Image (cartoon, rainbow, N blue to C red; front, top):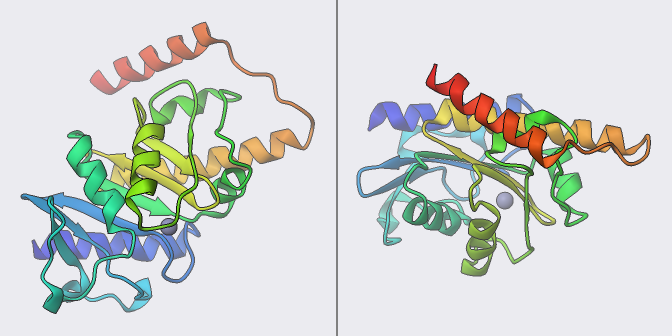
Length: 210
Ligand SMILES: [Zn+2]
């Protein structure tokens, strides 16, 4: 478990260094036994120690003596309970993904890399106050058949089978968001067809298998 805690800290610091989330915004978790390990509430990533990482059970219990989990722990709990493939979650307030989310807009297939999130588009979860079950519900809806989504007026979230992949996906969502914003400056981008996105998705699936 010590290694898992250090891994979470390593990637939390990368939220800062890779400019995915400033100071203490965003949060990271890893599925562990009958629960998950998650970054704590209100601590700057640069100062994190192994003991600061909090274990929360899948029914939402944690040892109060070991500190408080991120104020957004409920959507981590709800994702782990609803999506069994989710083994690691990265939530970031990355600038470009957040900028798109503030228009309550998802990202259409203007680029084939949108398929990285698992489908034909990247959806935007409806707004609800951070840390609420209502927000979890909105996020789960936007994550249906997807591994990443935007969250309206808030940021983005990505899950994967491990932390390195989840982090990479969050970076990809940020990059796609920047490309989308840039492309919108020239007018409305041409959208790839349903058929083409299906082709890209099946290619990505085969590539993974290979
Ligand atoms: Zn947040």
